Length: 282
Image (cartoon, rainbow, N blue to C red; front, side, top):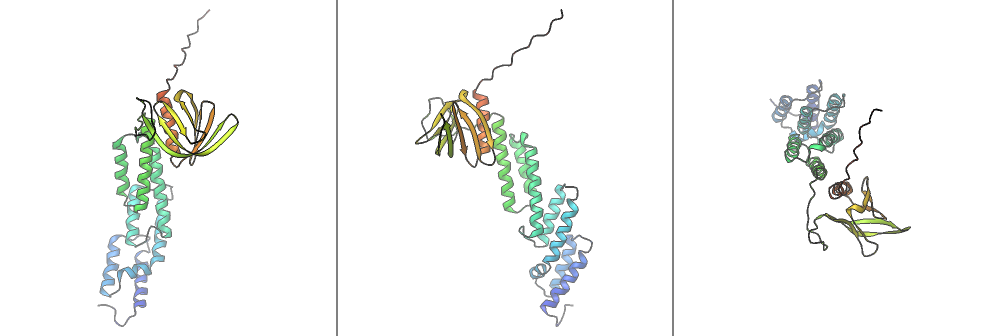
């Protein structure tokens, strides 16, 4: 029989007492949620309003669970899935305090896993396997999309490192057999003969040469004249084209630097190391 002549506020307070009793041991499995849901049905208490009323207790429960599963600085896949389900049962949004901390830890854990496997991510099956794993965690869409973007970025870098350079249609005229690998607008600083030029230009990476084209102060050189390629986080790449020192800024600076290093490795033949003859005994 439902509660008669009891105000809405009194029902909510009773719900809180029941909720606290059920989570006293620090857990809240689905069967306990069903008990509370049935109680709300019998007593004509809105289920959403009831869960919102115990949000502070729910946050405390999640913090307790988070402390429990991260005491060894590790989070197992099963624990991620379990706590994600708990957050949904408690109706806690990803932006709530405890949930936000949990998802930050999970996102960093998965990013670390992606970086740790970076050398294998040139393989499409390896990438798909990680995508399937990320999807299995049932994370909020914003976090899922960031992780997929990180994975695809590492896949691109792994392909460059393995020698697979992309080919695109250039917006500038090239030699007959010259392939274009990259083109983008960049901000650049060019130092040459003790003069410094700065501006916006077009970075063009081809199979023959590296170019920074601008209305004033551009520079181009074949791969054998490219040296000192260096990536400076978060968005700067420096290199030398002959006697000119150039620094460019672009959001994809890490990708550009990786492309330049591997294009140079492919297009500039490496001199074999000299063979050192064996010593003779007198």
